[in-house]
Structure formats: structure tokens, C-alpha cells
Amino acid sequence: MKLFMATLSTETNTFSPMPTGLSGFKEYYLRHGTATQEPPNLMTEALHVWRARAEQFGWEVVESLAAIAEPAGPTTSDCYRSLRDEILADLRKAGDIDVVLLQLHGAMVAEGCDDCEGDILERVRSICPDAVIGTALDQHCHLTERMLANCDLIVCFKEYPHDDASARAEELFELARRTRSGDIRPVMRAFDCRMINLYLTKTGKMRDFVQHMRDLENRAGILSVSLAHGFPWADVEDVGTRTLVVADNNPLLAQKTAETLGRTFFDLRYEVTSTFSALEDALCEAAAATSGPVVLADMGDNSGGGAPGDSTFVLHALMKRNLSNVASGIYWDPVAVRICRDAGIGASIKLRLGGKTGTDSGQPIDLSGQVMNIQSDLGQHLGLGLEPLGTVVWLRTGDEVDILINNLRTQVYHPEAFEQLGIDLADKSIVVVKSLFHFYAPFEKIASRIIQMATAGGTSPEFRNLPLTKRQDAYWPRVDNPFEERVRTSA
Ligand SMILES: [Zn+2]
Image (cartoon, rainbow, N blue to C red; front, top):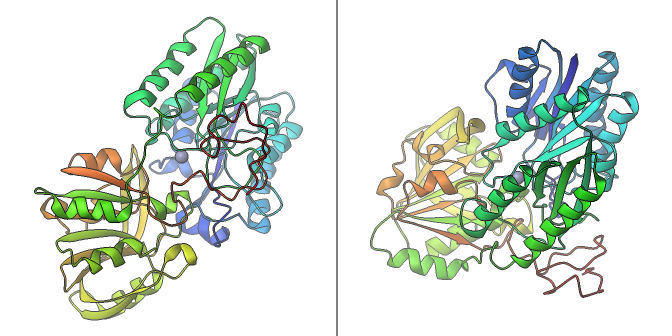
């Protein structure tokens, strides 16, 4: 038996003015067949799992590309084709392959191609029509008919924050192995829930829904159940939440289960989503808190969803209120990092920070402060994986605001992003993190309270008015019941 595996992952915010080019992959993660020789990150965990399991069974493993870029705007056509074609060339070179396993994102858009994953799978299928093709996806994906038609198995992460990449990779491997041996014959069906939103799976009704999916997987004939949450900030035809059911040789069971599950989820729409605080309300509450630190999430500037990572709306508001004993980060500003490096640790400097990438960044902010520390090649944990941080600077302003600046776009996942530099978050009154949800569990351990703020920016969680032009059907929350409305959702 011979296994071919690869990963290609970026999540495209089609509204971002920043193209995703080869430099975006090079600076975040780009390996040509060697990813399993080093510790895993979120999107290479699957490769580690698949290699270990395949070797247990005595299979030969062909490892191809592992390419990951921090989300931004559409991938340039040249970049997309060079990465895709490297995988396809490796596949042709590998000869007869029994099983192909790919870790893809599911929301990658390139110039001229709204469905990169569907395009890749179609080409993989044409190269090896008889192989079992399995795909692991981040659940923030656009699940398209082209993807479903061109592979045998799709399994999405179930957890957001994502801490189950390895578990889903195990599940996919086992299903692919059983398919290859003739034990099962998977068929997949999806159902469009007509919803666009974010769903945090760790608490409340979402926790129950994840458990419900697990229970369904124990029913006779059902092999796998996924909820593709969807990725809201993308103007593509298939944007939105979908259920996916893989059944054993029973398309009707797959279709009926997907639809029932999808309608159940739609009925829970108000219970599985959260409302978030306005910036000024959150700052009022944080300023009045008697114990710290209050952790404030700058949701609108989550680079993990394609926002620039250099917006200054929150920092301007903090300074206007003269709030002190604050830590805030991570600001993506390579020019500011360069200036701080040249000045050196201990130097007192004037610095113009952020507000550079576009209108989602706001206005730059002029600061005076001291460079407290500079560190390179640090990482921060996201689940089991260690994600890169680049070069990180700690700047302390005269108003006792500790600002974290780096030269590699990334959201805040873990308090260690600050603490490795020497910033003691437990002593702070307020900690501001640029992130949507992934920060939540690690920061819950140190926070007196967490407030998620619906701030302006490239990932503002205001889904009613997304400027979508390609989705055909209405969606909630733009309309209350899109199953009854026939209006197009075009803005
Ligand atoms: Zn995701």
C-alpha cells in the first residue's frame, strides 16, 4: 500500500486588499516533503498522524508539499499554480498510489479560482482515478459540490477553537483505510443551512451540538458527520454553513441525515451564536473592574481571518481614556520592528505605529516609549501545535501601556506571546488581544473576565451586511428565515 499526503492551507478574506503571494507562505510555513521531520503546527498535525498510522500498517509514505500562509486576500494566480502544481507533479512522480490524504483549508480563493480545494481535488482525481482520496478541512470552509464530487471522504475539524486536528486526521485515516480494503463504501451529502456566522464550540448549545454529531456517528450506516461552519468574509457562491454526512453506501441516508441535522442547527441559530460588546461599552466595563486583568478581544482585527493585524481603533480609544497598566498586541508592523531593532533594547524612541494596510487599519498612532525587549524566532501554542511569531518587540509607552509589535502577521493564541518577552499579564488591569476565539481557553486561565468586542476591521463580526454578490440564496442573519424568503442576498 502506498499513501500520498500533502497540505496546502490559507483562508482567503476576499475583502482584504493584501494579496497572498509566495512570500506569505515562505514566511509562515513552506516545506517540500519534510514537514514531518519537525514539530507539528495546526495544519501539519495531520501529516504526522498519517505517517505514523501508515508506517504502523507497513505502508509506503510519499510526503509532498506543506504550505501554509496567514490569511489575507486572494492568492495570486502564479503562487497558487506553483503550489498546486508542485503537489500534482509529486503525485505523478509517485506512480501507483492507493490512498491520497490531503489537509486543506477549504476556504482558499485565488485570482480566477473561487474554489481552490475543488480545483485541486478534481486534478488529483484525474491523475489517480482509482485511489481513495480523503480530505481533512478546517470547518471554516466553503463546502462545494466540486469538492464532494472529486473525493471519497471529507472530514472537518469539529472544534472551534481548533484542538482536534489530530483526532480528525486519525478518523480520516481509518475511514480511508477501510474504504481501500473494501470494508465500507462512503457516499457524501451536504445541506446548506442558509446561515453565516461564527460558532464557538466549547460551551452551551454548541457543545451539545458537537456531542449530537458524535452520537449520530454511532448510528448504523453513518460513517462521519461534520458541520462546515463556513468562512463569512468571502464573496464566493458557496459561502455559508453546511452540514456534511458520510454514509456507508447509502446516499439517501446521507442526504436525509444531513438535511435533518442542518434544519436542527438552523432552529438553534439564536442559541448557538453570541452577541458581542461595542468598543466603548467594553472599555467602560474594563475601566470599572475591581480586579484584573480584564481581557478584551479586538475581534475586528483578527489576522487569522484575513484582517491586517495593524488596526489602531482600540489603541486610540484606550489612550483617549488615559487607561494605564494595559498590555496590547500583537500589532503587525515590520517597519516599526525595524526601527525598534535599530534603536536597541533600552532605547527611548518616538514611533509611528500601525494604521498602514488599508481602511480596515484605521489611522496610525504616534507614540513615545522605551524598547523593553526584542526576541526573534519565538512561537506560541495553538492546541498541540507551535505557531511562529517572527521577531517580537515590547514597547512601553510613558502611559504604562505595554505594546507588542511583530513582523509576522499572526493573531494572539496564548499568553506566552506576551510573557516570553517579560510582560507579566497577571499584574495588568487590561489586556487587549487581536483575535476572535482562538485566544479564549488559554487566556481564561489568567483573566478575571473576558469581553469580546465587535470592533471595526477586516473581520468585524457584523454578518447582516456582508457585501456578498455571488451567493444565490438568502441567509440568516440578513433575513430571519431564509427558507421562506426568495430574495437574493446581493448587497
Ligand atoms: Zn478555522
